Amino acid sequence: MSIEIESEDVIRLVLQFLEENSLDQTKSALEQETTVTLHSITSKDAVLQNIQQGKWDIVLEQVIRLQVPPKQLMDLFEHIILELAEMNELSAARSLLRQTQPMYLLKQHQPERYLHLEHVLSRTILDAQDIYPGRLSKEKRRQVIAQTLANEVTVAEPGRLLTLLDQGRKWQLDQGLCEGNSFDVFAGGQPLVTTSISVDDPTVVGASNQDQFTNELYKTIKVPGGEMYAECMLLLNDGQSLVTGSVDGLIEVWNVQKGKLRKDLRYQAEKKMMSMDESVISLATTSDDDTLVSGATNGKISIWKLQSGLCKRRITPAHSQGVTCLTINAEDTEIASGSYDQLVKLHNLKTGKLVVELAGHTAVVNSVRYLGAGRLLSGSSDGTIKVWGNESATCLHTLNTLGNGPVQWLAPLPGSSQNPCRVIVCDKSKALSVLLINQDKFSQEYLGKNSKDVPSSDFMCAALSSHGDLAYALTDDGYMFCYNVLAGSLQGKVKVSDQELVSMSSSPTSNIVVVNDVAGQAYLFKPA
Image (tube, rainbow, N blue to C red; front, side, top):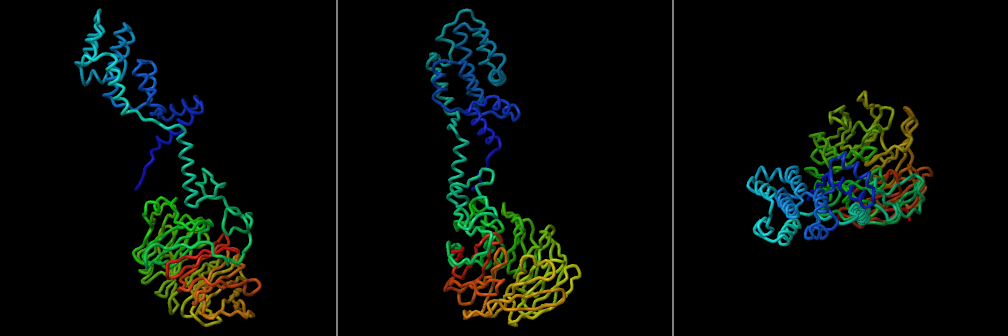
């Protein structure tokens, strides 16, 4: 359910806060600038008591700030005028009769009542039993008016602004969006993460300024739905969020600190999820996490505003078959995609228009990466890695992997935008390799070639740690291996699941790795 909060109500919260803290000049300035008044009181009983006791000067001051319907205002002002007439306060009575908005409305809509008041004020002798409507006594008439106004008066509990902020803080804590000592009103409750956070900082899981082996399972996420599971996952640059794309087309954003769906995103709280027509099999995001790009098995690409969940653009179709991989360039202006149709395509992120089509692979393209210096890498099930010139739209080099198996995944190491550069390659074999590109010269070597602990089954996908010091890879039999890239040695391995593994992702900013299986479980790992 969508709940709209009017901007005027926000101003009234501030006005109440100013009034309660005796900031009268500031309150008056805000009322004059915004033409908004508080329209509420802190005690209904006090207003009703003032009416029953006939303290009309106080009542009028209180009524001015309330949104009382015209009918009730006309009844109130009529009674006040009659009491003033009874007390022979004719000058004050005439001022109320002839110079107030309620009495002007009475004259327009019920002229006989208005003329009756004029007649009462012109009489020299008054009988109190005759002047009040219904021949009620003054006291009875006060009770009737008080009861009528009681239904129209809005009572504001004291300290509403601070109460709402405290409730918001508690909700953020419950959703895992902040820790007890990290709530920040202007940051929306998100914990503030800096690169100087120590390894054992309890407020941020996996926070560190150096790469560490993530071998401890700390959270498990169950993707909703009986037989649903995530086809792809993406840990965002904020270090707090995980995006999953599922076989049913749903795209969901999770909090990695608590392993819960992010309900602070309004569209998810209202169960209005981002979704595509068919299974989501690839994801990518801009460097600021503002824009999310998703690819589906029907060849379509969707571009989303991550904060609002709104689809900014659909590229229909981007490919004739499923979009297997996506990446965005460093300038956040271009999308590169690979597909079952054996093509690599570049699209403008802002307009969605096709920039260039790169043909040459003879099997599905499983991985694409921008290399810098106007170059693009692609890896295919045909066992080759191609180096493309973006602007020339030509294949500069075609390389075979050491294992000669289908290329499942590849990624340049940080700082590889210029020559020479190093690329981690995962093909369908029992070893990861490092590809060295030095202008037109190429060389490859295995990681962990001297390790006695060799995988018993082939690697299926891989991921790179935030600083590029560690490379992770999943095996077909449910293990996650970790290699030290600089030393070329095996760091360790972890048994993830007895179920078939599907995909993995590593955080670009922290030591968190997530792996998921066909049973719908996503396993979050951090350093032990």
